[in-house]
Every structure is written in C-alpha cells, then in structure tokens.
Length: 181
Image (cartoon, rainbow, N blue to C red):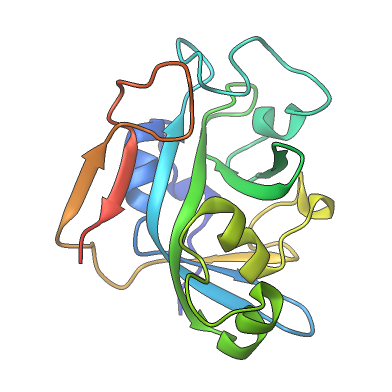
C-alpha cells in the first residue's frame, strides 16, 4: 500500500481526475472504510461556472482554495455530504468530486452506515455516508489524519468520459470519468 502524495497532482483538474480513478480513499478511526474510486468529476475555478469556486472564495468553499490534497466537504441540497480533493495549486481552487466507487475494506461498517447492502457507494452522497465523511473533515489534508488516499496499483483499462451530471451550468464538458465494467 502506497499513499498518493499531494505532490502527485499536476493542477490540471481533468488529468488529476483521471489520475484518481482506481485510487482508494480510506477514512480512518475506530471503524475504517475504504472505497476504490471508479467515478469522479473535475471542477476548475477559472472558466468553470459549475464550480463552487467560480464566483470567488467564500466561507463555504474556502477549503477549495487550499493546497493540493485538501479535502473539501459540503452538503448537497442540505441533505448529503459530498467530498472533493483539491488538486490545483493553493489559491486556484481546482478540485475533483469523488462520485462513486467500490467498498474494498470495512464492508460491514459501510452496510451499517448505509442501512442496506447494495448501492453502498454509487453516488457522492452514498459514498460519503459509507465512508463516514462529515463536515468536520472539511479542510483536512489527505494522508495527515482522518482520510488516506492510497495510490492505485494499475491504471484502469477502460475509462469513459461523459458530461458531468447533477449540475445546471457547463453541462456539456466531458469532465466526468467512469471506469467501465
């Protein structure tokens, strides 16, 4: 198991989103859960009206402006937690939304958190619920406390690029990446 250092991010949100596919996100603590990422979306601050950072820094999105490896957690529609990993240079606010994956560690804990045994992490809210992600993790740094980012052991063979989903602006950009199969 090799941790993916924040220095591995190039600042190119599209390339970095693809780079996160196959990596494992692990929440630490008494009941660790790990998920291998198979769906992500890229968000750039500059020129991307779908990004939370498009209109500038606010108290809500301040973590997006942190250094690479910063965790940006927010509530979607006031209901579900969603988690991003900052990949842009500090102050640039480029980030990758972690949309979904496969539980590879802590299955029983993920089932307990989700209250079901299927569809454990196939959506950003479900992913965060399975991992136990909360707003308290906002602003934390990967590999320095509550969340680890484990490098992939191989590059996924079949990656599909599609338009991002669940947004109303810049909907035509093919910045959602999914491992097929």
